[in-house]
Image (cartoon, rainbow, N blue to C red; front, side, top):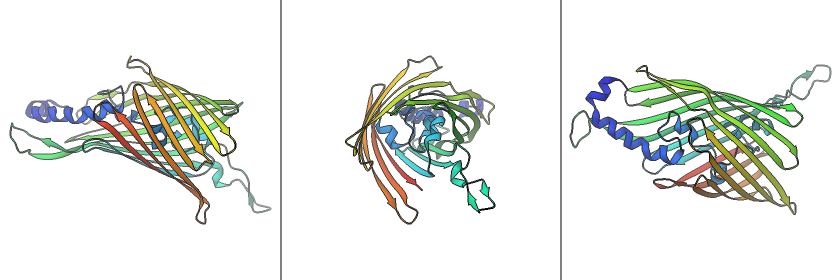
Length: 328
């Protein structure tokens, strides 16, 4: 931060560091790096499978994991995820996916009918993390704080995925970033991209690149560049006796921060696409969870899905995830 903040509030800065450390350490191996909150992930279903989701394409969550996967989303979807971290922090995420052909154009003016729209799906992402709501600020060594403040980080993005032909799919995304820390704030932007292949029944493979030229500039003039991250993934879905399904997934993530590659693996059992049980491994951490999907509810023949996950935290035990999804 600026010199004034560093010199006049040494105790405040120590409290900030202590407040950030648990969440960042549990969120990603890039703890302490710029944009560590972006690595926390999205969707309780994915979290329960160890976040091995780069090549799993079935819902709006892929807007985060791999933009190319949006090409598989054929219905409008809205999802909301809420995550509780040990202590006083939480994480809220909203995603909306809109297939372009849902608009039903172009129009045949002679018959009045609407033809098929263009290929591809648009995704909108909103994310907000609060590391702590009650960080104490002190200008002197006293028992009573001068005031309380929160550490707030967030991102909003626009993503697009489309088929290229020959079972190849491409996705691109742009995002804006913000960070509010006591009396200082920052803003920035970045890019994400992904490519996917599905040339064999049930099998998908994908490569995603996150934080391409992503940076954050503080009101003090300090600029932070986020390390680029590469993710390689594969997934295989098999159906057993029509109503039973298994999904296997595996990921390998490598950051240009020169840290070791991060392996992930996930397994899901589904019964009639209604009940789900999941488990996962994420670079030494385990996770588990489940979900239920209620199809064809209401006049719009929408489907409602609720997922839950509990994820091992490196420092403070377990994090709890809840995601609500609506397909319409």
